[in-house]
Image 1: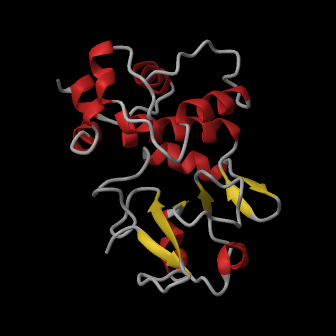
Image 2 (image 1 turned 90 degrees about the vertical axis):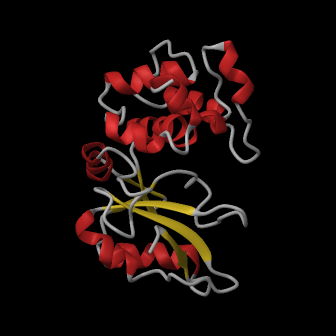
Image 3 (image 1 turned 135 degrees about the vertical axis):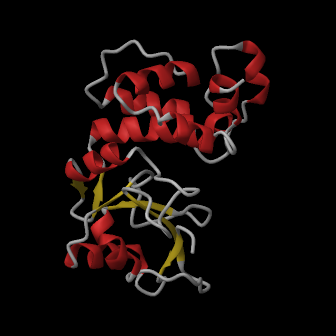
Length: 212
């Protein structure tokens, strides 16, 4: 079983989120939540859930997709089977738990990361999950030929805006993969060496930067 699930299109995302609230499930929608309950046809809903509530959340979604269902990816704090990210946790477990503890509710509808965790977790996603595919440039000119600008999201521009809304707004932070990595490392957000090795199988920037 993988982390991919499907929200019942008959109830819609609003009904799904209401169910999570009714069942007191400890979760956050990680990103692109500003337009919820609307989800673009080519998008999904990325959810982080507490380990103890992973089964409760799984009961609210389906493993099989019907025509109008909405795809979602569910990740548990410690990367439990079926809610893992390539056989590991999606974020460092302590940071994931922090995101849940500091979650805020938007429009009375959805739990999301607070401003700092939103900026940090999206930076993590861009650097360690996407790498060159985030469109964020490298400080090393020879690596920039590998950078691919995504069609869906302007990660660099979005991160600049999120930094301005966070407690790190006054920091002169260069939006390059290497600078973001050093910034995240200073706050304890860099993955451990084993996780970096695992992620490098799908992220060429990690291979170039740490194992090249």
